[in-house]
Image (cartoon, rainbow, N blue to C red; front, side, top):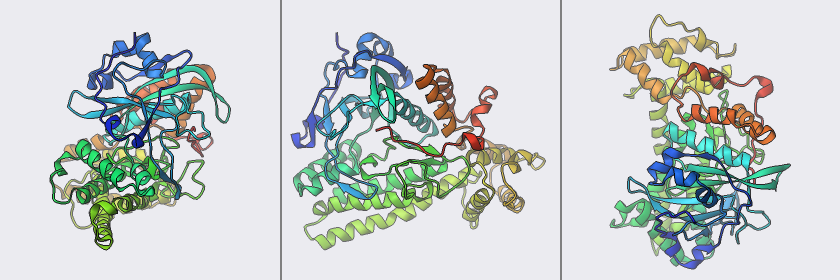
Length: 492
C-alpha cells in the first residue's frame, strides 16, 4: 500500500496559474541509495517505513504517498543575465508540505522524477552523480551551520539517463522551507499579473515572515528581510570557501536557504576569481563575485515588487533603492563578523578588518589552502607553538610572519584566554570540507564500479566537519596538481 504521510499542502491551494498538477513518472526498479534517518526523525517520519519497499517507491516516484498533491511550480528567471520568462520545475515535483517536530512547514520535493509541463526539451530525469553530489554537499552545508535545503533520500531508479554519457538514473528527495524563488516573482511580474505577485507575496509573508504581516508596509518589510537574509547567507558561503556556480535568479530562494547544488565547488587554494562551473565561461559567478550577484538578483526582485510598494512608481523605486542600498553594509558586517571569528576575534576593534584582509592577501599571494590555513591558525595561539605546519601552506610569494606577529598581539589584547580563542576557532573553522577531488572520486567509484564505500566515508566525515579524526586525515589534504578538479558540471 502507498506510504502515508500527513501533508498540509498550502501552495497547492493557491490559484492554478501558480503551478501545474503532475504525477511523478514511475521508476522501473527503485532502490535506496542513502537515507537521512536523522532528518527523517526531525520531520516526524518513520525511517524504517521510508526504507521499506513502499517507502522507497514513494521516494522514487513509483507511487504517490497518501495525502500528497503533486505539483510542478511555475517560475521564470535570469540565467547568466539573460531573462527566460517560463522555466518552472522541469524535473521536480513538490509532493506536498509537512509540519516538522519543531513546527516548521517544509516542502517535500522529488528532484529527477520525470517530465513536467515545464521540461521543454528535457527528459525530467536526474543522474546518480548529481543527485548524490547534492545530497552530500547540502548535508555538509547544514553541518557547517549554513541555511540550506536538505536531502532526505537518494533513490536509484533502475533506468539509464543520457548525459555526457549514459548514466544510472536517480531521484533526490529534497526538503526546503520553501521553493519560492526570485524567479517565482519574476514569472508574475513579466506577465503584468499584479494580483499574482500580491498573492505570492502574501503567501511568503504568512509562511516565512509572519511577524511582518501586520506591519504598516509589509511588502517593503518583506524585501528588507530577503535582502538581509541573502547578505548573511553569502557571507557564510564565503567563510567556508563555497562557490555556488549558478546564481541565477531562479536559484535564489526567498527563504534565504542555499538551493540547487549544480556545478558547485569549494576553494582549495584561496583564489577570489575562481569559477569552476563549466557553463560559467565569463566567471560571472566566481567565488569573489557572489555578493555582487546576490545584490543584482535582489534588484530584480525589487523590480517585481514595485506595484505592491506604492501606486506612485517613483516612490516605489525609492523604497527599493533604499532597502537595496543596505545590502552592501549588511553583507560587509556579516562577512567581517564571521571572518573575525575565524581568526579568533569576537569583539571588533579598530584595525581588525585589516587583519582579515591582510591574511587573505597573503593567502592569495602564497596560494595557501583556504580551509587548512584557518584551521591550523588555531594551533598557533600558544606562543611556543610550532608554526611549521601553518607556514608550510604558503608559497615563497607570501610574507606571513609580520601578519602573525600582529595577530598574536591582537589576541593577547583581547578578553578571551588562549584556550577559549582556540576552542572558538575550532568550532567555526571546519577541519575538512567536501573537497572537489574527493567528491568526484567517490562519485566515480559508484558510477563506474558500483562501490559506495568512499561516498559513505566522505559523507560521514563532512557531516561532522569540525572533528579531527586521524582516520579521515587524507580527506582533509588538498589535491595534488594532477588531482585538482578544473571544471564542475550541472548535471542537466
